Image (cartoon, rainbow, N blue to C red; front, side, top):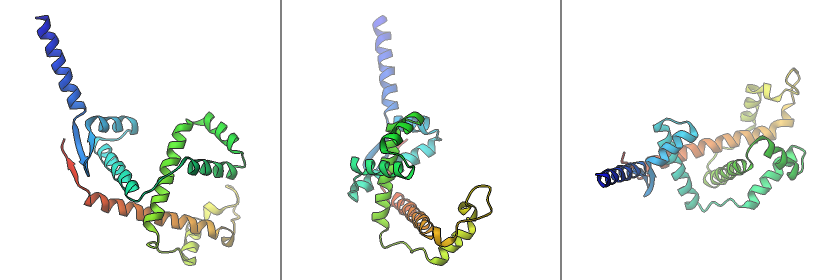
Length: 198
């Protein structure tokens, strides 16, 4: 009797483990399990459908990085952190120390890694395909976002357009690059071989 209960318990546990690790979605031959979905729901605070969409996007992003031969090195990450420190008038060591006090450094490095991957991919995919921001585009952005160019929060005085036009150009081009990347991945998602199993 005890042996039957033990075997039945073992069978139920095996069934449960199989179901948890069951294949839910296949994206271009890459598997997403029910466990992956549950994990994304818990960690990212997403609904089931949002988690599935997030994981599909993540796989397509990784596959596109490989296809386009995009690599982010430790040197790239260290250079980015050094630039952030310089902009904040600190040494890299001071910046890292303050960062460690405020958040998890390894999570910060992971975020930078992903950001640099996106930037490199966006640059490679959009080269020669974006409409260059004109002076009129920049002036319109300046007028529509004049509060961003105030000397201080309580001041009515604004920084002249000629002093910020390069910054505005970069902002507009980054926006266009991000829009292009979103459209690119929306099309990629449509053409991908995605099979929903559960």
